Image (tube, rainbow, N blue to C red; front, top):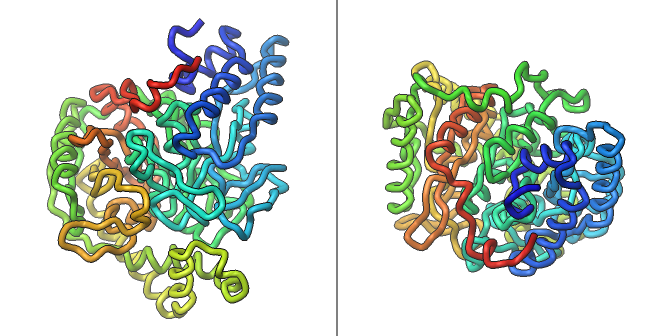
Length: 475
C-alpha cells in the first residue's frame, strides 16, 4: 500500500498502483472527492461536480483490473477539466450567464483521449468568463482563491485548475492557454504547467482565438505532465492545424538531461518591468541551471512588446464571437469583458492584416535567438500573486495599469506557438510562489520537458505544500 496520503500521490504513482492492484480506483476517487468536499469551500476551485460519473468510471476501471485487463496509462488518475472544454453529457458554461445551462453533446479530443486512457474525470474547474483575463472569477460561480494565500488570486484563466492541484484535490488539472492561461496560474500556485507546441494537442471545436490557443496539464511534477501529454498529444482530422504525432514518448526521455546545452536567460525580454523581489529570485534560480550541466548566459534582448499584436488576435477574436449578441444580452457579461468586446468590434480588417504582418516579423526576431541557444528562460510572471479583486490590470510601479502588464513574458509565445513551461523557483518573503518560464524551439516539446525535469531534480519543489493543504485531515 502507498505510504503517503492518496491526495499527495502523483498521477504516475496512482496509475501504477491501480494497474497493479495495489490500490483501487474507487479508493482513490473517494479520497479525492472527500478532499474536494473538505478543502474546496475555502477556495472555490470546482464549479461543477462530476462525482457520480467519477464513481462509475472508477468502478469500471477496478472491474477491468480484476479481469486482468489494462485500463490504460492513466488508470484511476483523478483529473479535473476546465469549464471551457467539451465533455459529452456535461455542462460547459464558459463561466458565462449566456451558457449557464449549456450541455455539450460530444467530447473535445483531449477529453476523449483521457477517458480512453482510464482517467477519472472528477469535475469542472472555474475560470473567468470565456477565459478573458488572468484572474479567476465570474458571475455564475464566483471567485476562486489561491491556496498559498486565500486573499490572493490563483491567476487565470485556468485558476480553478491550479488551485485544485495546489491544494491536493487531484494531481492533474487540464487548462487552456491563449495568452498565459496555463502558465500564469501554474506560476501563481507553485505548480508545473506546460503549453506544448501549437497544434500538438488538437483544438476542436473551433473558436475565434484558435491561432493562439493551446491545451495542456497543470501538475505538481514534470513526470505527471509528461505522462498526460503522452496521452493527449497527436493529430485529429477535425483540426487542420494539428501536428503529426511526435516520434517519442515524453515520459521516456525525461531523464536524459540537458548537459552541454546553452541557455539564454533574459530578465526582461527587452520590454518587461519586473517586481524587484521576483527579479532577484528568478535571476538566482536561472543560474542554477548550470548545475544541470548546461551553460547559462544572461542576454540583453531588444525585442519589442507584441502586446498590441496579441491584443488584436485575442480580444478581437473574442469580440468576433461575442459581438453579435452584445446589444441584446451584453448586460449579462462581466463588465470588464463587455468593455473589451465593445472595443474589439471596432477593429478593422486592415488592423487584423497589419497584426498578421507584425506577428510574422516578431517570429523572425525570436527564432534568431535559437541559432545560438537551445532554450530561452525568463521570469514566469513579473509579479507574485496579486490580491483578489484587482482583476486583469494589476499595477506595476510607475506604469499605468493595462491588462497583462504584469505578465509580459507569456503572451509572446502564444503568437510564436513555441512550447513553454513554468517551473517553481522560489518564494517571496510573504510566502508566495515565484516561477521561471522555459521556452523551447518550435516543436521541441521534449526539450522543454527535459530541461524542466533537470531543474526539478535540483530544486525539488514538489515536496512543499500550502499550509491550507496540509492543515486538513484527509486520506
